[in-house]
Image (cartoon, rainbow, N blue to C red; front, top):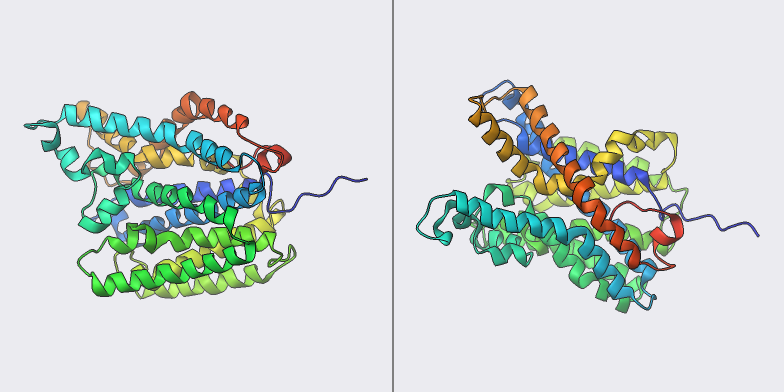
Length: 387
């Protein structure tokens, strides 16, 4: 009897690493792009659309994690395996980063006490971040965090979601889970509208608060459920039609200034439009994985960047700070607004993330093999995209 062909939505989908490579690259461009009246600053509106890269991460993560949970829900060690694997992937680098940030930086700054240093003044109490709640503090206080902690809001949203989501997958029938996720997508939009209307002074609430952004992850989860309940046919072509329609809507919104993430229009409908566009792109990528049309997403440098995207995301702002300090010590200009300086920052961030991957993260990830099962995609189909 011939072996059963694996479903296209399981196993090693290299194209998703390619998408994550694109996502982290546009995030780097967004954070490193100069402003002001420089020649590059004129393209700032386009460059700063890179904030959307985080939303692409959310959709991909939702699809992969929900898929793993659905496939392993009946396993005897379902909870143990999931939480152990997520902890091994996320916690080591995250907590090393926090410990170093909250010890080295305050020690290097002047102040009457630890909590009087500028870093801790802007960061708040370390427990906010050690408990993955930094985004809540930012939302309810409307304060920006210390510079190198800025990306942590999205990691907090993911962890808060995945702490609870395994229980829903285990207890709800797939049809009920589908309806619940659809309700979450609608609820998040309504929450953003209400927060903009009722709490206009909390300008960061719609962007960083979990209840305001959980729709993006839910769309990825809906894709995972849809494949496993037969809602999406493997030969479906409608996503290829939907993507140009959504892109046209995005272009129209950009022309109207509605894709500035600080605008009211973006905080409400804009975030939803972005989520649906990336949902369609991820869906089309899955349906066409292995084809010539998605070959560019299998390009080795792009998939490598996707593989190290977690370290790149967590470490890119510290790498920028270190680069600036080194250049200042040599008497070099750190205020350059040229393209070469943007490129240098990106290269340094990738180098730092690569060192983290090869010397630290990849060594710990070998332990994940102790927490798998016959149902897990990694066991049945080889190495999956790193989740």
